[in-house]
Image 1 (spheres, helix red, strand yellow):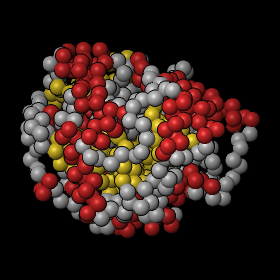
Image 2 (image 1 turned 60 degrees about the vertical axis):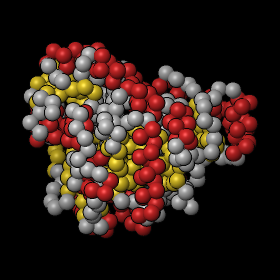
Image 3 (image 1 turned 90 degrees about the horizontal axis):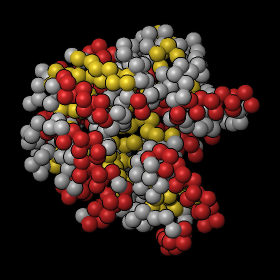
Image 4 (image 1 turned 45 degrees about the vertical axis):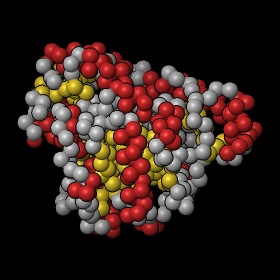
Length: 500
Protein backbone atom coordinates (compact mmCIF):
# COMPACT_ATOMS: atom_id res chain seq x y z
CA UNK A 1 0.00 0.00 0.00
CA UNK A 2 1.08 3.58 -0.63
CA UNK A 3 2.74 5.54 2.16
CA UNK A 4 1.96 8.97 0.71
CA UNK A 5 -0.40 10.25 -1.99
CA UNK A 6 -1.10 13.65 -3.53
CA UNK A 7 -4.65 14.86 -4.15
CA UNK A 8 -4.88 16.82 -7.42
CA UNK A 9 -8.16 18.46 -6.51
CA UNK A 10 -9.86 20.74 -4.02
CA UNK A 11 -12.92 21.21 -1.85
CA UNK A 12 -15.32 18.44 -0.92
CA UNK A 13 -13.69 15.63 -2.89
CA UNK A 14 -10.22 16.49 -1.57
CA UNK A 15 -11.56 16.23 1.99
CA UNK A 16 -13.25 12.92 1.14
CA UNK A 17 -9.99 11.45 -0.20
CA UNK A 18 -7.92 12.76 2.72
CA UNK A 19 -10.30 11.19 5.25
CA UNK A 20 -10.14 7.78 3.54
CA UNK A 21 -6.33 7.99 3.38
CA UNK A 22 -6.06 8.84 7.07
CA UNK A 23 -8.13 5.78 7.96
CA UNK A 24 -5.61 3.67 6.03
CA UNK A 25 -2.55 5.40 7.55
CA UNK A 26 -1.61 6.97 4.22
CA UNK A 27 -0.06 10.43 4.40
CA UNK A 28 -1.55 13.09 2.15
CA UNK A 29 -0.33 16.07 0.16
CA UNK A 30 -2.76 18.79 -0.91
CA UNK A 31 -2.15 21.26 -3.72
CA UNK A 32 -3.89 24.62 -3.52
CA UNK A 33 -4.46 27.86 -5.38
CA UNK A 34 -4.28 31.39 -3.97
CA UNK A 35 -7.97 31.32 -3.11
CA UNK A 36 -7.74 27.95 -1.33
CA UNK A 37 -4.78 28.80 0.90
CA UNK A 38 -6.90 28.51 4.06
CA UNK A 39 -9.51 26.03 2.85
CA UNK A 40 -10.51 23.01 4.93
CA UNK A 41 -8.74 20.47 2.74
CA UNK A 42 -5.39 22.26 3.09
CA UNK A 43 -5.76 22.16 6.88
CA UNK A 44 -6.57 18.45 6.94
CA UNK A 45 -3.75 17.28 4.66
CA UNK A 46 -0.37 16.37 6.15
CA UNK A 47 1.33 18.68 3.65
CA UNK A 48 0.07 21.44 1.36
CA UNK A 49 1.82 22.86 -1.70
CA UNK A 50 0.90 26.12 -3.43
CA UNK A 51 0.62 25.65 -7.21
CA UNK A 52 -0.74 28.87 -8.65
CA UNK A 53 -3.33 31.59 -8.94
CA UNK A 54 -7.04 31.22 -8.20
CA UNK A 55 -8.38 30.40 -11.69
CA UNK A 56 -8.25 26.65 -12.32
CA UNK A 57 -6.39 27.25 -15.59
CA UNK A 58 -3.57 28.74 -13.52
CA UNK A 59 -3.52 26.12 -10.78
CA UNK A 60 -5.53 22.89 -10.73
CA UNK A 61 -5.17 22.35 -14.47
CA UNK A 62 -1.39 22.80 -14.45
CA UNK A 63 -0.28 19.20 -14.82
CA UNK A 64 3.44 20.03 -14.75
CA UNK A 65 3.18 21.81 -11.40
CA UNK A 66 1.17 18.98 -9.88
CA UNK A 67 3.73 16.42 -11.01
CA UNK A 68 6.50 18.61 -9.59
CA UNK A 69 4.69 18.81 -6.26
CA UNK A 70 4.32 15.04 -6.12
CA UNK A 71 8.01 14.48 -6.84
CA UNK A 72 9.12 17.17 -4.39
CA UNK A 73 7.09 15.66 -1.55
CA UNK A 74 7.81 12.03 -2.35
CA UNK A 75 4.19 11.14 -3.12
CA UNK A 76 3.96 7.71 -4.70
CA UNK A 77 0.54 8.23 -6.28
CA UNK A 78 -1.90 10.94 -7.35
CA UNK A 79 -5.65 10.82 -6.84
CA UNK A 80 -7.33 13.19 -9.32
CA UNK A 81 -10.80 13.25 -7.72
CA UNK A 82 -13.39 14.33 -10.28
CA UNK A 83 -13.29 17.23 -12.73
CA UNK A 84 -10.06 19.11 -13.51
CA UNK A 85 -7.49 16.53 -14.73
CA UNK A 86 -9.35 13.39 -13.67
CA UNK A 87 -10.31 12.30 -17.20
CA UNK A 88 -7.37 13.70 -19.11
CA UNK A 89 -5.43 10.80 -20.63
CA UNK A 90 -2.30 12.92 -21.03
CA UNK A 91 -2.17 13.48 -17.26
CA UNK A 92 -2.40 9.76 -16.51
CA UNK A 93 0.37 9.23 -19.06
CA UNK A 94 2.50 11.94 -17.43
CA UNK A 95 2.11 10.24 -14.07
CA UNK A 96 3.26 6.92 -15.51
CA UNK A 97 6.21 8.62 -17.22
CA UNK A 98 7.33 10.04 -13.87
CA UNK A 99 6.93 6.74 -12.00
CA UNK A 100 3.90 8.07 -10.10
CA UNK A 101 0.82 5.88 -9.86
CA UNK A 102 -2.34 7.45 -11.21
CA UNK A 103 -5.23 6.35 -8.99
CA UNK A 104 -7.59 5.59 -11.84
CA UNK A 105 -7.52 3.77 -15.18
CA UNK A 106 -4.48 3.96 -17.42
CA UNK A 107 -4.27 6.52 -20.20
CA UNK A 108 -5.25 4.04 -22.91
CA UNK A 109 -8.58 3.25 -21.24
CA UNK A 110 -9.27 6.92 -20.55
CA UNK A 111 -8.58 7.83 -24.17
CA UNK A 112 -10.67 4.96 -25.55
CA UNK A 113 -13.70 5.49 -23.34
CA UNK A 114 -13.40 9.27 -23.22
CA UNK A 115 -14.34 9.41 -26.89
CA UNK A 116 -18.08 8.90 -27.18
CA UNK A 117 -17.69 7.55 -30.71
CA UNK A 118 -14.92 5.08 -29.86
CA UNK A 119 -16.81 3.97 -26.76
CA UNK A 120 -19.94 3.44 -28.84
CA UNK A 121 -18.06 1.31 -31.37
CA UNK A 122 -16.62 -0.76 -28.52
CA UNK A 123 -20.11 -1.20 -27.06
CA UNK A 124 -21.48 -2.44 -30.38
CA UNK A 125 -18.63 -4.96 -30.70
CA UNK A 126 -19.45 -6.30 -27.23
CA UNK A 127 -23.21 -6.55 -27.76
CA UNK A 128 -24.11 -3.63 -25.51
CA UNK A 129 -27.25 -1.88 -26.84
CA UNK A 130 -26.63 1.61 -28.23
CA UNK A 131 -28.91 4.37 -29.44
CA UNK A 132 -29.36 4.23 -33.26
CA UNK A 133 -27.21 6.79 -35.06
CA UNK A 134 -23.71 7.54 -36.34
CA UNK A 135 -20.82 5.50 -34.99
CA UNK A 136 -18.14 8.00 -36.03
CA UNK A 137 -17.65 11.77 -35.71
CA UNK A 138 -19.29 13.75 -38.48
CA UNK A 139 -18.75 17.17 -40.06
CA UNK A 140 -20.48 16.88 -43.44
CA UNK A 141 -23.97 18.40 -43.32
CA UNK A 142 -25.31 16.23 -46.13
CA UNK A 143 -24.24 13.06 -44.35
CA UNK A 144 -25.74 14.27 -41.09
CA UNK A 145 -29.03 15.08 -42.85
CA UNK A 146 -29.07 11.63 -44.42
CA UNK A 147 -28.56 9.85 -41.09
CA UNK A 148 -31.16 12.03 -39.37
CA UNK A 149 -33.70 11.15 -42.04
CA UNK A 150 -32.95 7.44 -41.72
CA UNK A 151 -33.29 7.26 -37.94
CA UNK A 152 -36.14 9.79 -37.78
CA UNK A 153 -36.64 13.02 -35.89
CA UNK A 154 -36.18 14.11 -33.16
CA UNK A 155 -32.41 13.59 -33.19
CA UNK A 156 -29.66 14.55 -30.78
CA UNK A 157 -26.37 16.19 -31.76
CA UNK A 158 -23.62 15.50 -29.21
CA UNK A 159 -20.01 16.58 -28.90
CA UNK A 160 -17.65 13.66 -29.38
CA UNK A 161 -15.42 14.86 -26.51
CA UNK A 162 -16.51 16.08 -23.11
CA UNK A 163 -19.86 16.06 -21.34
CA UNK A 164 -22.01 18.05 -18.93
CA UNK A 165 -24.47 18.91 -21.68
CA UNK A 166 -21.99 21.06 -23.62
CA UNK A 167 -22.08 20.70 -27.39
CA UNK A 168 -25.49 19.05 -27.20
CA UNK A 169 -28.61 20.01 -29.18
CA UNK A 170 -32.00 18.37 -29.70
CA UNK A 171 -33.32 18.84 -33.26
CA UNK A 172 -37.01 18.25 -33.92
CA UNK A 173 -37.18 19.15 -37.63
CA UNK A 174 -34.79 19.08 -40.59
CA UNK A 175 -35.07 22.83 -41.08
CA UNK A 176 -33.39 23.36 -37.67
CA UNK A 177 -30.56 20.91 -38.26
CA UNK A 178 -27.92 23.20 -39.81
CA UNK A 179 -28.34 25.94 -37.22
CA UNK A 180 -28.22 23.48 -34.33
CA UNK A 181 -25.18 21.72 -35.77
CA UNK A 182 -23.24 25.00 -36.02
CA UNK A 183 -24.17 25.93 -32.44
CA UNK A 184 -23.18 22.51 -31.08
CA UNK A 185 -19.83 22.54 -32.90
CA UNK A 186 -19.02 26.06 -31.72
CA UNK A 187 -19.78 25.15 -28.11
CA UNK A 188 -17.81 21.90 -28.34
CA UNK A 189 -14.81 23.71 -29.82
CA UNK A 190 -14.92 26.34 -27.07
CA UNK A 191 -15.36 23.83 -24.24
CA UNK A 192 -13.16 20.92 -25.34
CA UNK A 193 -10.98 22.18 -28.20
CA UNK A 194 -12.66 19.61 -30.45
CA UNK A 195 -15.68 20.39 -32.64
CA UNK A 196 -16.38 16.83 -33.79
CA UNK A 197 -19.93 15.65 -33.14
CA UNK A 198 -22.08 12.64 -33.77
CA UNK A 199 -25.80 12.25 -34.23
CA UNK A 200 -28.21 9.74 -32.77
CA UNK A 201 -31.91 9.13 -32.20
CA UNK A 202 -33.29 11.32 -29.43
CA UNK A 203 -34.89 9.19 -26.73
CA UNK A 204 -38.02 10.86 -25.40
CA UNK A 205 -38.94 10.69 -21.69
CA UNK A 206 -35.53 9.20 -20.85
CA UNK A 207 -34.31 7.93 -17.48
CA UNK A 208 -30.60 8.26 -16.68
CA UNK A 209 -29.34 5.09 -15.00
CA UNK A 210 -25.68 4.49 -14.21
CA UNK A 211 -23.79 1.52 -12.81
CA UNK A 212 -20.94 1.86 -10.33
CA UNK A 213 -18.05 -0.35 -11.38
CA UNK A 214 -14.87 -1.65 -9.77
CA UNK A 215 -12.15 -3.39 -11.79
CA UNK A 216 -8.69 -4.49 -10.72
CA UNK A 217 -5.48 -4.84 -12.71
CA UNK A 218 -5.91 -8.61 -12.87
CA UNK A 219 -8.99 -8.64 -15.10
CA UNK A 220 -11.67 -8.86 -12.39
CA UNK A 221 -14.71 -6.60 -12.84
CA UNK A 222 -17.81 -6.21 -10.67
CA UNK A 223 -20.71 -3.78 -10.47
CA UNK A 224 -22.15 -2.31 -7.29
CA UNK A 225 -25.64 -1.69 -8.56
CA UNK A 226 -27.32 1.25 -10.22
CA UNK A 227 -27.96 4.88 -9.41
CA UNK A 228 -30.95 6.83 -10.66
CA UNK A 229 -29.69 10.22 -11.89
CA UNK A 230 -32.71 11.46 -13.82
CA UNK A 231 -33.46 14.50 -11.67
CA UNK A 232 -31.49 16.99 -13.78
CA UNK A 233 -31.54 20.63 -14.83
CA UNK A 234 -29.84 21.47 -18.10
CA UNK A 235 -28.11 18.07 -18.10
CA UNK A 236 -26.70 18.68 -14.60
CA UNK A 237 -27.58 16.13 -11.93
CA UNK A 238 -29.32 17.55 -8.85
CA UNK A 239 -30.68 14.55 -6.93
CA UNK A 240 -29.45 10.97 -7.17
CA UNK A 241 -30.76 7.82 -5.54
CA UNK A 242 -30.24 4.08 -5.35
CA UNK A 243 -31.94 1.77 -6.08
CA UNK A 244 -33.98 3.06 -9.01
CA UNK A 245 -37.71 2.54 -8.70
CA UNK A 246 -37.91 1.21 -12.26
CA UNK A 247 -35.26 -1.47 -11.77
CA UNK A 248 -36.12 -5.16 -11.45
CA UNK A 249 -33.55 -7.74 -10.42
CA UNK A 250 -33.61 -9.14 -13.94
CA UNK A 251 -33.01 -5.75 -15.57
CA UNK A 252 -30.29 -4.88 -13.03
CA UNK A 253 -28.43 -8.11 -13.73
CA UNK A 254 -28.74 -7.68 -17.50
CA UNK A 255 -27.49 -4.07 -17.51
CA UNK A 256 -24.76 -4.85 -14.98
CA UNK A 257 -23.43 -7.68 -17.16
CA UNK A 258 -23.37 -5.34 -20.17
CA UNK A 259 -21.35 -2.82 -18.15
CA UNK A 260 -18.90 -5.51 -17.06
CA UNK A 261 -18.37 -6.74 -20.64
CA UNK A 262 -17.64 -3.22 -21.79
CA UNK A 263 -15.01 -2.51 -19.12
CA UNK A 264 -13.34 -5.87 -19.61
CA UNK A 265 -13.06 -5.16 -23.33
CA UNK A 266 -11.46 -1.80 -22.55
CA UNK A 267 -9.00 -3.46 -20.12
CA UNK A 268 -10.23 -1.06 -17.50
CA UNK A 269 -9.03 -0.90 -13.90
CA UNK A 270 -10.08 1.11 -10.83
CA UNK A 271 -13.46 2.76 -10.17
CA UNK A 272 -15.63 3.92 -13.03
CA UNK A 273 -19.25 4.42 -14.04
CA UNK A 274 -21.10 3.04 -17.06
CA UNK A 275 -24.07 5.23 -17.92
CA UNK A 276 -27.25 4.17 -19.72
CA UNK A 277 -30.36 5.89 -20.94
CA UNK A 278 -33.65 4.02 -20.47
CA UNK A 279 -36.79 4.76 -22.47
CA UNK A 280 -40.41 4.60 -21.37
CA UNK A 281 -40.58 0.93 -22.35
CA UNK A 282 -37.58 0.06 -20.17
CA UNK A 283 -35.36 -0.47 -23.19
CA UNK A 284 -31.84 0.61 -22.27
CA UNK A 285 -29.01 2.05 -24.38
CA UNK A 286 -25.36 2.72 -23.58
CA UNK A 287 -24.62 6.40 -23.03
CA UNK A 288 -20.99 6.82 -21.92
CA UNK A 289 -18.33 5.83 -19.39
CA UNK A 290 -17.05 8.20 -16.72
CA UNK A 291 -13.48 7.09 -16.08
CA UNK A 292 -13.29 8.42 -12.52
CA UNK A 293 -15.04 8.56 -9.18
CA UNK A 294 -18.50 10.12 -9.47
CA UNK A 295 -19.85 13.00 -7.40
CA UNK A 296 -22.75 10.78 -6.33
CA UNK A 297 -20.66 7.83 -5.16
CA UNK A 298 -21.78 8.10 -1.48
CA UNK A 299 -25.25 6.66 -2.17
CA UNK A 300 -23.62 3.47 -3.46
CA UNK A 301 -21.32 3.34 -0.44
CA UNK A 302 -24.25 3.55 1.96
CA UNK A 303 -26.25 0.86 0.19
CA UNK A 304 -23.36 -1.61 -0.22
CA UNK A 305 -21.13 -0.78 2.77
CA UNK A 306 -18.13 -0.50 0.42
CA UNK A 307 -15.77 2.50 0.68
CA UNK A 308 -15.05 3.32 -2.95
CA UNK A 309 -12.06 5.58 -2.30
CA UNK A 310 -10.35 2.91 -0.20
CA UNK A 311 -11.03 0.41 -2.96
CA UNK A 312 -9.39 2.81 -5.41
CA UNK A 313 -6.27 2.87 -3.25
CA UNK A 314 -6.15 -0.91 -3.02
CA UNK A 315 -6.64 -1.43 -6.76
CA UNK A 316 -4.03 1.19 -7.70
CA UNK A 317 -1.51 -0.46 -5.36
CA UNK A 318 -1.93 -3.72 -7.29
CA UNK A 319 -4.29 -5.64 -5.03
CA UNK A 320 -6.97 -7.94 -6.40
CA UNK A 321 -10.62 -7.18 -5.69
CA UNK A 322 -11.58 -8.76 -2.39
CA UNK A 323 -15.16 -9.23 -3.62
CA UNK A 324 -16.75 -11.26 -6.38
CA UNK A 325 -20.08 -10.27 -7.92
CA UNK A 326 -21.84 -12.82 -5.71
CA UNK A 327 -20.32 -11.19 -2.61
CA UNK A 328 -21.95 -7.80 -3.33
CA UNK A 329 -25.05 -7.25 -1.21
CA UNK A 330 -27.53 -4.39 -1.19
CA UNK A 331 -29.50 -2.99 1.71
CA UNK A 332 -31.85 -0.03 2.16
CA UNK A 333 -32.22 3.12 0.08
CA UNK A 334 -30.01 6.21 -0.27
CA UNK A 335 -30.69 9.69 -1.70
CA UNK A 336 -28.18 12.47 -2.39
CA UNK A 337 -28.90 16.18 -2.87
CA UNK A 338 -26.30 18.61 -4.20
CA UNK A 339 -26.31 21.78 -2.11
CA UNK A 340 -25.19 24.61 -4.38
CA UNK A 341 -24.52 28.33 -3.99
CA UNK A 342 -27.06 29.56 -6.49
CA UNK A 343 -30.16 31.69 -6.38
CA UNK A 344 -33.21 29.69 -7.47
CA UNK A 345 -35.31 32.85 -7.23
CA UNK A 346 -33.08 34.67 -9.70
CA UNK A 347 -32.50 32.37 -12.67
CA UNK A 348 -30.19 30.10 -10.67
CA UNK A 349 -27.39 32.62 -10.85
CA UNK A 350 -24.23 31.66 -8.93
CA UNK A 351 -24.24 33.29 -5.50
CA UNK A 352 -20.89 34.43 -4.16
CA UNK A 353 -19.84 35.87 -0.82
CA UNK A 354 -18.94 34.89 2.72
CA UNK A 355 -20.91 32.25 4.61
CA UNK A 356 -21.78 34.05 7.83
CA UNK A 357 -23.72 31.21 9.48
CA UNK A 358 -24.20 27.48 8.99
CA UNK A 359 -26.43 25.02 10.82
CA UNK A 360 -25.71 21.59 9.40
CA UNK A 361 -28.19 18.74 9.73
CA UNK A 362 -27.30 15.56 11.59
CA UNK A 363 -28.99 12.51 13.05
CA UNK A 364 -29.53 8.89 12.17
CA UNK A 365 -29.00 8.15 8.48
CA UNK A 366 -27.63 11.58 7.52
CA UNK A 367 -24.21 12.08 5.94
CA UNK A 368 -22.68 15.27 4.61
CA UNK A 369 -19.60 15.45 2.37
CA UNK A 370 -18.25 18.99 2.23
CA UNK A 371 -15.14 21.11 2.07
CA UNK A 372 -16.81 24.30 3.35
CA UNK A 373 -16.90 25.77 6.86
CA UNK A 374 -18.71 28.71 8.39
CA UNK A 375 -16.75 31.85 7.55
CA UNK A 376 -15.54 30.52 4.20
CA UNK A 377 -16.09 32.48 1.02
CA UNK A 378 -17.86 31.11 -2.03
CA UNK A 379 -15.90 32.12 -5.09
CA UNK A 380 -16.75 32.56 -8.72
CA UNK A 381 -13.65 30.59 -9.72
CA UNK A 382 -15.00 27.10 -9.03
CA UNK A 383 -18.12 24.96 -9.18
CA UNK A 384 -20.81 26.34 -6.83
CA UNK A 385 -21.44 23.05 -4.99
CA UNK A 386 -21.18 23.61 -1.24
CA UNK A 387 -21.80 20.07 -0.10
CA UNK A 388 -23.45 16.75 -0.81
CA UNK A 389 -26.22 15.82 1.62
CA UNK A 390 -26.98 12.10 1.74
CA UNK A 391 -29.81 10.30 3.53
CA UNK A 392 -29.97 6.55 4.12
CA UNK A 393 -33.04 4.63 5.23
CA UNK A 394 -34.56 1.19 5.34
CA UNK A 395 -36.59 1.98 2.22
CA UNK A 396 -37.26 4.87 -0.17
CA UNK A 397 -39.95 6.45 1.99
CA UNK A 398 -37.69 6.35 5.04
CA UNK A 399 -34.72 7.84 3.16
CA UNK A 400 -36.88 10.55 1.62
CA UNK A 401 -38.32 11.49 5.00
CA UNK A 402 -34.87 11.81 6.49
CA UNK A 403 -33.67 13.91 3.58
CA UNK A 404 -36.61 16.31 3.81
CA UNK A 405 -36.06 16.70 7.55
CA UNK A 406 -32.35 17.35 6.97
CA UNK A 407 -33.00 19.96 4.28
CA UNK A 408 -35.35 21.83 6.61
CA UNK A 409 -32.64 21.87 9.29
CA UNK A 410 -29.86 22.98 6.92
CA UNK A 411 -29.41 26.75 7.34
CA UNK A 412 -26.86 28.84 5.46
CA UNK A 413 -26.62 32.63 5.66
CA UNK A 414 -24.56 35.12 3.68
CA UNK A 415 -25.29 33.55 0.30
CA UNK A 416 -28.23 32.09 -1.56
CA UNK A 417 -28.59 28.33 -1.94
CA UNK A 418 -30.82 25.83 -3.74
CA UNK A 419 -31.99 24.13 -0.53
CA UNK A 420 -35.63 25.23 -0.80
CA UNK A 421 -35.65 24.22 -4.46
CA UNK A 422 -34.41 20.73 -3.57
CA UNK A 423 -37.03 20.41 -0.85
CA UNK A 424 -39.74 21.38 -3.33
CA UNK A 425 -38.57 18.67 -5.71
CA UNK A 426 -38.61 16.02 -3.00
CA UNK A 427 -42.13 17.05 -1.97
CA UNK A 428 -43.62 16.92 -5.46
CA UNK A 429 -45.83 13.95 -6.32
CA UNK A 430 -43.66 12.91 -9.29
CA UNK A 431 -40.66 12.31 -7.06
CA UNK A 432 -42.73 10.64 -4.37
CA UNK A 433 -44.13 8.26 -7.00
CA UNK A 434 -40.76 7.81 -8.74
CA UNK A 435 -42.39 9.00 -11.94
CA UNK A 436 -39.85 11.43 -13.37
CA UNK A 437 -37.25 11.61 -16.13
CA UNK A 438 -34.35 13.82 -17.21
CA UNK A 439 -36.76 16.35 -18.76
CA UNK A 440 -39.08 16.64 -15.78
CA UNK A 441 -37.63 19.75 -14.11
CA UNK A 442 -37.52 21.94 -17.20
CA UNK A 443 -40.53 20.64 -19.08
CA UNK A 444 -42.88 20.21 -16.14
CA UNK A 445 -41.71 21.38 -12.73
CA UNK A 446 -40.40 24.83 -13.68
CA UNK A 447 -43.48 25.59 -15.77
CA UNK A 448 -45.82 25.41 -12.79
CA UNK A 449 -46.90 28.76 -11.39
CA UNK A 450 -44.31 30.58 -13.50
CA UNK A 451 -43.41 34.00 -12.09
CA UNK A 452 -41.85 36.64 -14.33
CA UNK A 453 -40.11 34.54 -16.94
CA UNK A 454 -38.41 37.58 -18.44
CA UNK A 455 -35.90 39.47 -16.26
CA UNK A 456 -35.85 43.26 -16.45
CA UNK A 457 -33.01 45.16 -18.12
CA UNK A 458 -31.04 45.60 -14.90
CA UNK A 459 -31.34 41.91 -14.03
CA UNK A 460 -30.38 40.93 -17.56
CA UNK A 461 -27.20 42.99 -17.30
CA UNK A 462 -26.33 41.45 -13.95
CA UNK A 463 -26.96 37.95 -15.28
CA UNK A 464 -24.79 38.58 -18.32
CA UNK A 465 -21.96 39.97 -16.18
CA UNK A 466 -22.17 37.04 -13.79
CA UNK A 467 -22.06 34.56 -16.66
CA UNK A 468 -19.01 36.18 -18.23
CA UNK A 469 -17.10 36.37 -14.96
CA UNK A 470 -18.07 32.88 -13.94
CA UNK A 471 -17.02 31.31 -17.23
CA UNK A 472 -13.87 33.28 -17.91
CA UNK A 473 -12.66 34.14 -14.38
CA UNK A 474 -11.62 37.59 -15.50
CA UNK A 475 -12.25 39.39 -12.21
CA UNK A 476 -10.34 38.18 -9.15
CA UNK A 477 -12.94 39.42 -6.64
CA UNK A 478 -16.34 39.79 -8.30
CA UNK A 479 -19.29 41.02 -6.27
CA UNK A 480 -22.36 39.63 -7.93
CA UNK A 481 -25.07 38.05 -5.80
CA UNK A 482 -24.29 38.53 -2.12
CA UNK A 483 -27.10 38.30 0.40
CA UNK A 484 -27.28 38.32 4.17
CA UNK A 485 -30.51 36.33 4.05
CA UNK A 486 -30.98 32.59 4.10
CA UNK A 487 -32.92 30.17 1.93
CA UNK A 488 -36.03 30.11 4.08
CA UNK A 489 -38.23 31.88 1.53
CA UNK A 490 -40.08 29.71 -0.97
CA UNK A 491 -38.14 29.71 -4.22
CA UNK A 492 -39.95 31.28 -7.16
CA UNK A 493 -40.58 28.99 -10.13
CA UNK A 494 -38.87 30.72 -13.03
CA UNK A 495 -37.77 29.43 -16.38
CA UNK A 496 -34.04 29.59 -16.06
CA UNK A 497 -30.65 29.40 -17.68
CA UNK A 498 -27.80 27.53 -16.04
CA UNK A 499 -24.46 29.32 -15.83
CA UNK A 500 -22.55 26.41 -14.38
